[in-house]
Length: 193
Length: 120
Image (cartoon, rainbow over all chains, first blue to last red; front, side, top):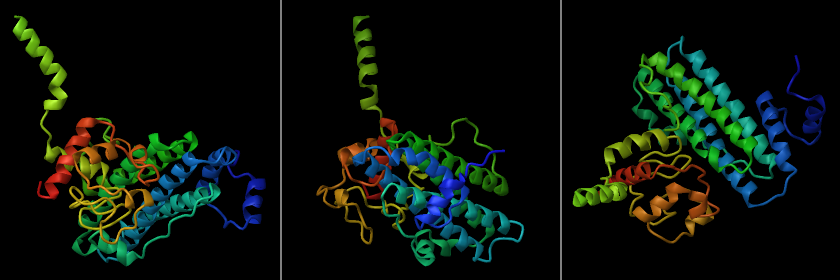
């Protein structure tokens, strides 16, 4: 079975001072390296802007799951799933940071968890159901955001990455919806509509 | 008969323009499309949305805008929000939002919802 991580590239990344990347980050870079070799310009700057907005979303999601895990409202059965989802968002974050840097951009920094908690009105959360509802809402919003920016990317490889990120958020939404006992959407094409 | 036909033609041609906007539908659309980045009462990845209709662009307290939006120099109204949601990068090059709303009816309903939040 072939690996997507090329040993030569990994060495190059280490040699250039880049931290060890997740498999997802390397996969992203494999797509964006083509673009890095292409002409620089406004379209690339625009792509970096979009990626940075996506990075902001991922930072927020990581904080949101940390807030949820520390709230005392999440049961022992649900906690590992929340931690796993947070792990996915950390992989997204790392991949986005690596790509933004590769394209010559400056990745946006994460906001403190306390600021995110205020922005998400975390003090209103009183039960596990409240936590799951918030996560469900944010995951759907993130999936739709990733779908919604696909036409805006000038590089088709990045558009594909956006679709892959949207798929992960959709996966989270499905699990959260099942945990909440929600019915499936009655109609197709629920996301991105 | 000719009159009836003429009325039908006018109805077809003018339908989209005459269709009433639906702020309730706009709320549902906002919750599906905008909530990934925006909240009503707090800045998140994007600025807070309550009061955006009628607010000068780039002036939500505490939010750090792109230069393009900060220097836009206009007040958000139906026309500008319509252009923004149709294609932010085309309307204000250099802005950060890559998300657009393709359907004009969806845009109109979202704008109606945002307007309702401003007491409009």
